[in-house]
Figure 1 (cartoon, rainbow, N blue to C red):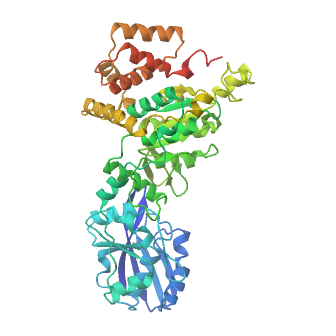
Figure 2: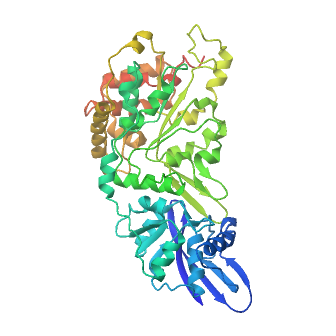
Figure 3: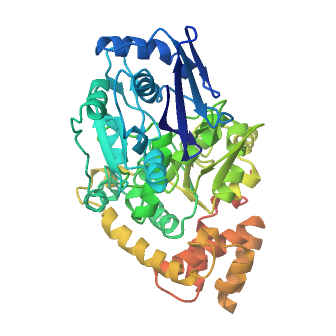
Length: 511
């Protein structure tokens, strides 16, 4: 007898329905699995055999042929155990399941018949709804994630016996229902860190506000213990809240990577990713023999924090240049190409020298040559993509001992939101959303300078020996500062503040 069961395969951050055809005939004995399965699927026969035996069923001693179509698409992982097992039971007439074709069935089996959670549930559920399936049957740990998708019945099970009884005896399964919008709104302002906890560092906090308002990449330069990491961790709390569309995009990526917790349904706050400096280039941008999203994609719609940036391998930093520009990463293989979104805000930190201190600090023991070599670890093209460079000075004892709390993230965020709304209105007819994305053509149109501002930036370029690439960056940042003040025109004090945020371009650093 031939039976068809439906599962799903992950391809990039979307899913494709897989038809699992199970045919059983009496002409011999064997178990044949075809359709480009990987080793985890090939080993499924052992898990299925033990699981069925432990719930009172068995794999028949006949010739079993299982085809996973389309046959030219590689299938990965143990998530097909449940669908293959159900196919074998129906094809061998051990159970009756008239409506099994109406459901996507996925789950990894344990030897006792219980189910283990799987990856990529959200894109699978979205695809199931688009293709008109009545429902989806999954391990119970994955149901909250799948229940985000409306107009789809989501059933969570703990054991294969529950699925068998559902189809064979009509015993109903418990449907998981989730109010996505309510859950999203309840947790949208939940942050573990707040800017009010940061003592001193008013200049750095202001630079963070400007960066958040314009979507600018930022690098913090300062000695150890000055609060660079502390400041970076609080950036998500002042960024605009995720829209529901952005939340779904971000959740899909984390779902495919298997980073969603069992109690989590929808990501409600912007992600903050902080990879260690020993990370490989594949782990950062994504890829591998079975491509998976990397850290830059897991930071999509959020923040990627590179602590001690010069300590990262040069190759790792350089492969990040193209995704920073295109806001997506393309993984190419001989037979297929996968795209992962990677629109993130880069926050980096570094010491000013190998010894950790500024050149004029008495504690600095680094020679001029050592300092130059340390700075050269960051290439010009990479620095070209970082709009704001800000020095973070050591916090004095009086500031640390002060009992008064600083400004709350909530108050800073209100100003950021006003600036973002101004930018959304300005760029509504363009394929850009905020100031960091504007190109040279938009700079001429939206960043016009009066004579005073023009003379100021000209003098800065000459006196401070600013590089040519600093010019565009100063204009972009000045545009954001003007937006924070709700000023239609860029004024001289906006240019003046923007010039301060180009530390690495100054002659002072090229010692």
